[in-house]
Amino acid sequence: MTWWMWFVFGLVLLSGEVVVPGGIILLFFGAAALIVGALAAAGLEGPAWLQWLLFSGISIVSLLTLRGPILRKMTAGDPSAESIDTLVGKSVVALHDLAPGAEGRVELRGTSWTAENTGEASLVKGQKYVVQRVDGLKLFIHS
Image (cartoon, rainbow, N blue to C red; front, side):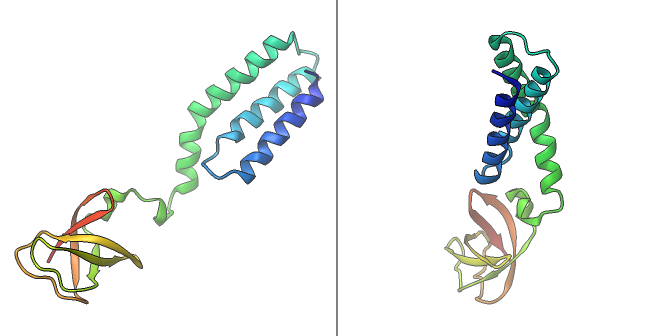
C-alpha cells in the first residue's frame, strides 16, 4: 500500500475508536497504521507483506504492553472504576426489614442491591449496616 493509504486507514481506525465503546483497542491499530504510513512516506516501505507484518507486530505489541497502563491511568481516582471487592466494609441502608438469612434490597452509593442478612438479628428498614463480603452482584451484610 502507498503511504497515504496507510494514513487514511490509520485515521479510519482512530475514528472508530471514538465511535466504538470498549476500552481503547482500535487506538493501537490506528497508531500502527500511521507508523507504517510514515515509514512508507520516508521511503522505507518494502514489499506489501512486510508492511502488513509491521502493522500487525506494532499493533499487537503496543496493545499488549500499553493498554493496561493507559486504562489504569484513565481510571485512576474514578470511584465507579473501583473493584467490586472494595465494597467490603462499606455502609448500606436496608430498604426493608430483613430476617436472619433472608434476602432483600439495600441501597449502596445510590443504587439498589440484592443483599442477604448473614447476622443473627433482624435488620431494620432505614438503618445502616456493613458489607461483609460480595459474591457477584449480591452483598452479604449484618449489623
